[in-house]
Image 1 (cartoon, one colour):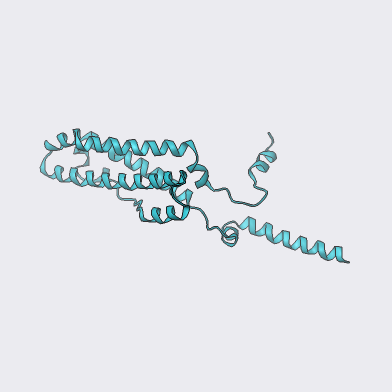
Image 2 (cartoon, rainbow, N blue to C red; image 1 turned 60 degrees about the vertical axis):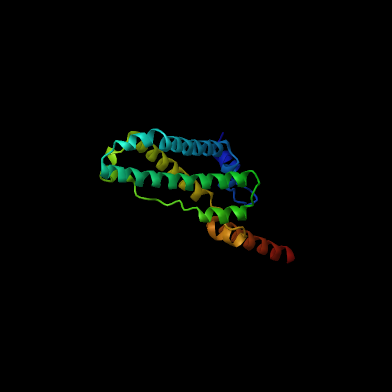
Length: 187
């Protein structure tokens, strides 16, 4: 396949922007991220209610406070990620409209909090909690990237044109040449 033909296949001749968000949300990759996120929530809940509870009993006082703090942060982060995933899945399933999804997603705070690995005493936390924290940040980073990529531009053409300077130039050239051709044809 020549380079020219592969480029031609990628260009939408109608000038319409392809929505990464819509395509990703409808893909199997979204389903995998969703399942991974929900499995992590389940794993964390199971750990914190089981092994984690037992492991935290033998920790020194200052590490017990750190354990409680980091487990609450983990839970909060996972609830935010699960909310984002559930909203996107509801949109995919047609249970909510795009406008409803935007309102709901605006309430989800995908905050980039400091990584606790640099916190004094982090290495003394049980390995199970540290593993869950690291996995939650990895998922968080992926979802933040997806969220940014999935932000759809405003629907009207003026916004799309200002977001795409090449489309603006092509439109200007089309107007100039179509006007010029009409003037030549009229003579």
